Length: 200
Image (tube, rainbow, N blue to C red):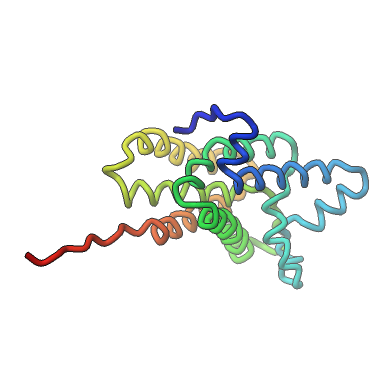
């Protein structure tokens, strides 16, 4: 299910939203490597609670596309590349985009509400955890129809949550907030269809 055997053209055609998100994150990271311009872009876009309080609300969005270093980018984009396509295919591109962006935004807002004014963070993890949360909703809504998904995604969700608490420098609030938001959106989007019962 999560084995990616498509070539580049097949992948981008089958999963356009995931492909665009991957491209944006990569391009933004390359921009941050450019001397002078890169530092300005990074520090203007990161999520910084004091700056957000002073009206720089765009940081809640731009920070989702910034990464601290190459390994940070690699880990997040690997998760997006491998796990997100099935969700885009299952729910459709616009609902998938809503899950991704709203989950990331919710993680940023919760971070702003719960952390002190000096707190700063970057990364797509909140949005990606929203994808995991949406899979959790699928497991709830269609638990008898997706046994293969349960066997694969449930351990991944559990391990991801555990690593959130064990790894240093992680924005726990964004991770858990993003996952909870993705789960709630998933429950909303994946409402079971009502069966029409005819009278005899």
